[in-house]
Image 1 (cartoon, helix red, strand yellow):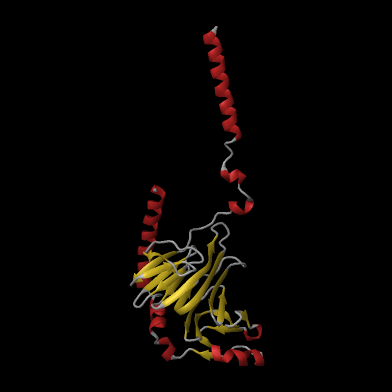
Image 2 (cartoon, rainbow, N blue to C red):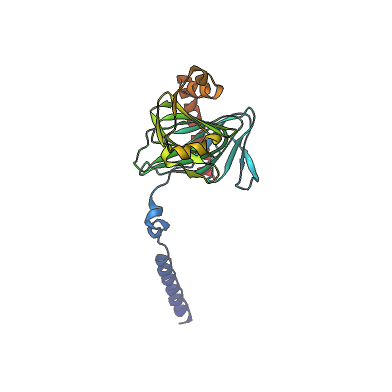
Amino acid sequence: MKILILAIAALAAIVGSAFFIELNSTSPIEEAPANVLEETGEKPWIEVVSGKIFEFDKNGKLIKELKTGDTLEEKRIVDAGTGALANIHFGDGSFLKVDSETKIELTESTFQKTSGKLSVKIWLTIGRVYSQIKNLATLDSEWQVETPNAVAAVRGTAFGVEFTKGKSIIVVLENKIEVAAKDPATNEIIESSKTIVKENELVIVDDKDIPQLKIEKRTLKIKQVSDKILQRAWIKKAIESENPAETIKMEEIKKIEEIRQESKNIE
């Protein structure tokens, strides 16, 4: 009799446990809010071409030296010192070339695989960056490069931005972009200054011109890209990056990314 009672008790315990597990085995996907269900692509990652690239937090605290294949977090500072060069790759195939003596912050960098939406916002503190952007897949996709006194927004093109000594130079090499001046004292966009800059055109925004620009309420003056501009080292490097040799190199980088992902899966 005692053995029978123990057997019944054990069976009841097993049934109860199974019932408890069933009640609590709902997968995280089933319980997740709808906005979490949309598949999010990978974070942008860096290719260190030369020199040393460092990552800092918003307070200027060093986090680490970046290596090829490292993913990048939003709100972090990427600092390329003298002689350093890097490419930052995004989920849709777009990339940002970071020149030496350049400091940027990725204020936003998201890519959704399911919809193809890409949202990239880059703050250029100093130096030079070159954006090579795929045709953005959705109407709400965006790519924006901002300096202390200018902001450039695009939907799919190639352009470079330089900011040094209170002066922004925005050079368009493909298609067109919208550029506006900003008041560096208030960080407010000067709406009347907005203008469309087309292929082989450039605009210059200088801190000293901001007060007059606000008074005149005019659009930014557009200039043609001269041979002198095209001969600047960072522009030449950007143009050269679009040749077949770079395509081969990108295939090598793709392989590195695949290896990096395999390593992550093993971990």
